[in-house]
Image (cartoon, rainbow, N blue to C red):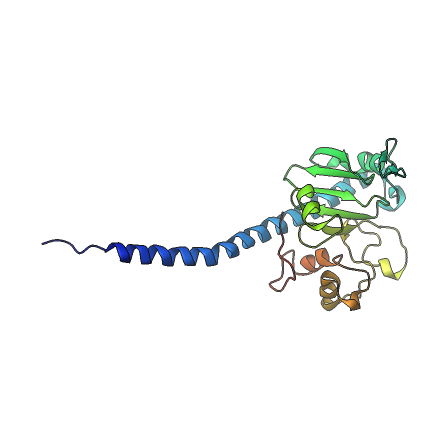
Length: 231
């Protein structure tokens, strides 16, 4: 007596069903993995950079005294970087770099500098200041190529370091280390969403509040987060 076997058509139908299920679920699995990587690297950067601030305070005293708002390299009329001393990079190398696991530091085309970390992430100050910083959970070149050099809440995230007492609009940064960008935040979750999305009610805070929104959700990307993150 012969055992009953599947026919070729039954095997093909089964494989087709498996293929359809895989096609439907793989994007979700890939995105969930991207979310986890971005969440983990955001938390790690937040912890590492603020540990560096604390260690610098042990050596140099309160951060309010050694913090400076400095610019990077000059740019000529043709858009080329004028080589010379970058005050912002010298400041970073003195106060924070010694306490971080850094692979390399490179000058960027806008006169700023990019710091590459051991876990594959990177960060940089905005060229005109050491107050505003951008964190990349993955390759910055890839992120900038796909979305531009501004903070986008997908593969680049805004932080701020402004420990000086500069009025009520800075109250979420005063006397603190590196924090997700919260300048003039009213303390509500709604405004974080508006600033992350870039709605008309959020003024110029287009994408800037995305980092704070993730932090507000215990460093987890909310289910209704407006973008698909990547690294």
